[in-house]
Image (cartoon, rainbow, N blue to C red; front, side, top):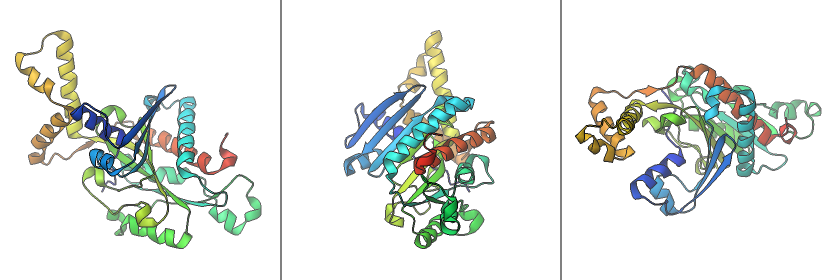
Length: 316
């Protein structure tokens, strides 16, 4: 079963603005253009903001990078550096810290394999510090990593596995990587979100699992997610909107099309979901290039994590 979830704060903020016509109360937003990428920092600073967009109080940083689908090395390096900078600001690790990197998801399903792929590429060092400390140079911290699988494979709640490791290893922070489900086609495999509020595996598909956050583990939990799928209702809604836009441009719109045009994105989405539910059409869609994209994006994220944790790798 997927551990994919819908958790883009930037999308929740957009839905609120579309419905109300104003900025979200209790939320501060900063937008930065970084060349061919855009960084949006959303800070939910009180319970009013939390209730308004359905997200816990905390920081949500979204890196929108359309060029990720082209898999250009120079572009990918730039996005990795943006990720490093944002992670450093959230982590603030002491010099002698230990970080546990957790790759959530099902390694047998391409669209859900992001977390395990990142874990396989992160530089782990805890064993070197423990057994051969003379072989580790300056500028490195202790890192350990785990891809615990999903409940359907292990029969154990992921949160229980991670809690047991945290109790035994006693890391200073957890970085959890997971696949997300987006509400916009354009954000699939082109967006990276970082948050300090932790993670709820499976919530994007209604499969709620126990959370991984400060309250559950007693240490900071930084979550990194990339939307890798959209559901069928999103695809249908976007197709309808493209049809409406095309009719507007051509001047061939029928007289009754205005009804659809006046509906908000959320209203269109809800209507399509109602149509699909009786047919049990709970489908998710992912691009055909998913294998290549998972490989390249996991490399970007692993490099960003390595550079954020290990000062020795910051300029590589």
